[in-house]
Image 1 (cartoon, rainbow, N blue to C red):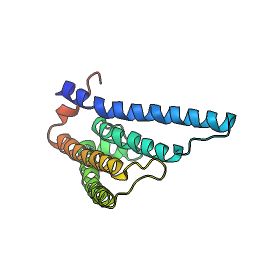
Image 2 (cartoon, rainbow, N blue to C red):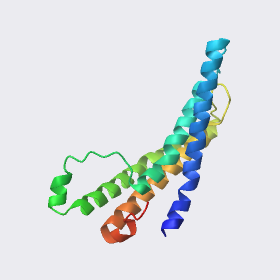
Image 3 (cartoon, one colour):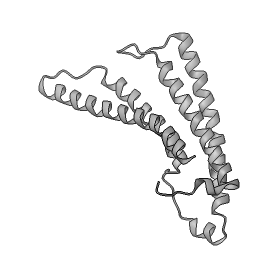
Image 4 (cartoon, helix red, strand yellow):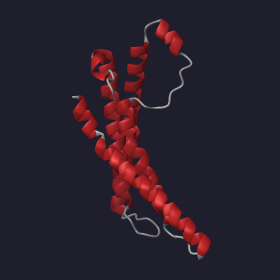
Length: 165
């Protein structure tokens, strides 16, 4: 099962990496053009916004599946002493996953509205609903992953142990 999960993380990380590279190249070219011939890329702002959304939301399901979120461990000694770490981690994952369903569905509603209205970006006239559906899909995927991770922490924690990961 571990090799399958590793294979499933490749496409979103590749998408995020490509978007990050494009963002880097766009920023470099924009700065060079702005500094040398006073001709900035007019659409740089909207392309930067789109690329940042792609980077963040493509990586979110992978970060959640690998449990690589930034955490504050002030209460960890208490939970460790009471042997409640698994219960806490499972509860946090399930609650966070459940809470992500609402924004995911809300973004889907907004994407559908923008598709019906024909909303496009200012300079390049890119339909906004494409990126919104991407955000919706990645948010809902993250929600499902968090809920599954929480349930696995409670009922089958051996499936989540890391070996040479």
